[in-house]
Length: 398
Image 1 (cartoon, rainbow, N blue to C red):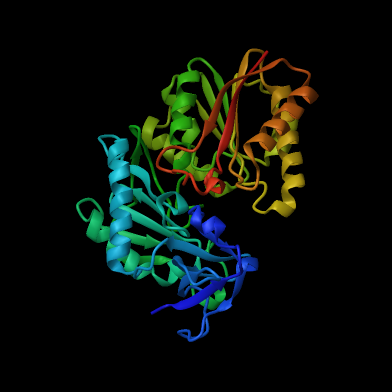
Image 2 (image 1 turned 30 degrees about the vertical axis):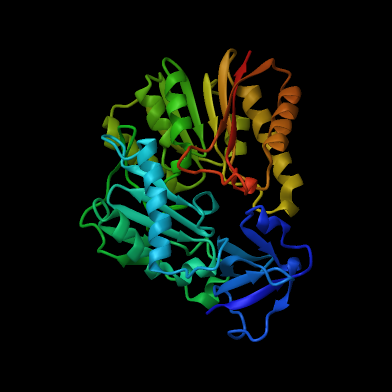
């Protein structure tokens, strides 16, 4: 049924350990007879050099040549996707994420839910589907059907959003839009831990909101009472909302994007009206920190990924060092700094060393209060440690 890819001798070891990637250098060629030339996005049967069936995956161009969907020979069809999505849903039900005051969570997290190349985020009654591989792009209609079959008791629509995540999108004809159901009649409102926000899945970053910081935002709320708070790289203002609810004395939200600043202001009004002690400022982060006259008691640094590839890792680590050094020099005595990296290419150890270097440069006494990570609805497949991308530190600065 599927074209058969043969690995070089000895290259099956990682698949026998259930690692979900096959690298291009491990492939010897196609078996004969084959179903024909392999195109990007095709489903392929992967076999060892000795002829052992290792599983089925999506073929793709680049260093990762196959993303494994199953480690057995089985059809990848509506039933397959329905089973995997059902398993993912049961995990989220176990986590208690769909509850009163919280209708926002990640339903499918790629390799962490055994569906490499696929992200599905839920905002109340809308699923936002994001493909990171050609195979998932080609199966998007099938995936939407499986989503509605498994989650039809709360989902009304599926929006496809892969314009900025799909490799080689020009040849694949990627177009964002609704692939099941109709657009909502009014501007949608979703809830996270009792706070409301407007997810912008049509034009916003990622799927419309950074769901992966939910638990870390709740921790900010615990520290916010009576504090002067700076939320740098605020995007939609998630950390700012929690700080305000936590009783912050004042909150400044800063982003270089005018659209992000407007989204933050709209979300603050949605929850606290027009009298909240909040300012939304459009400014570049490094320049703002260098020139800021304010002294903040609580700072949040949640920048976009500084390194999307290993080749830019040295520059990324230098960026984290400079950013944190600026913040550590500006924060008030006995202040608390939340600092993050969402770069998969940056290891937890490398990020921590960058922050240590920044602390030395600042000349301040610094202690680690918490070491943070992504939440449970962004699970890490134990056989795929590369899936651990979000890391953070909470620092006490004397």
